[in-house]
Image (cartoon, rainbow, N blue to C red; front, side, top):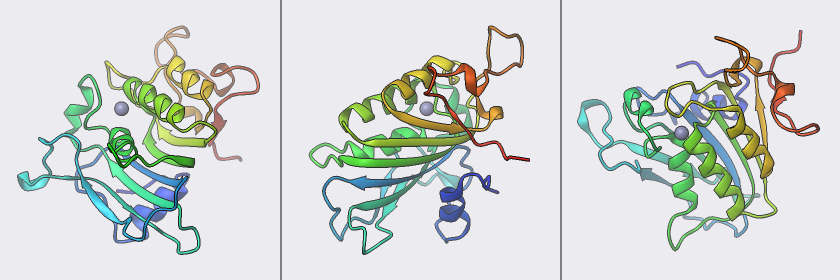
Length: 216
Ligand SMILES: [Zn+2]
């Protein structure tokens, strides 16, 4: 699967290393997280899918998330890779146990092992759905004073949880910095069939989605 070159971290994580995602994944996510407490040297591992029924090719249980410490110098930095753990058809379901963002949030919020951060950078192939936007909003509240950025390429348009303009505005309202190309922004029912909101129409003045469009 070719990764869009605008997702710099993801391209590096999934194409330039041997750490390929499991076969058949649609939504991919990579994150860099600067923890408030330095991660221990054992902070390397694989986490099973949050949905215990999730199965990969051949019916074997599927990994949900991988993480490692990329640098000895930055002992509090973790790199995380995750993906949707269900079949593509599961992406139409309500709630989000098979979504990539859910794997990330459950990892950071592991009971009795919460990983609080001062900074998080997330790259996603698709915009977060309505349920994932609400969850990422809570994640930011759990980490007051943190910087948080999220970039994506494709719009998530599968009903009933297709990304809406107000979902993104809520995320920006709690301090997430968002970046996407014009083709990755939500559809606008107000404008007519197939029309999208523009970067200028999402968010308040001075707080808008940054453009990932290639300058010509
Ligand atoms: Zn989602």
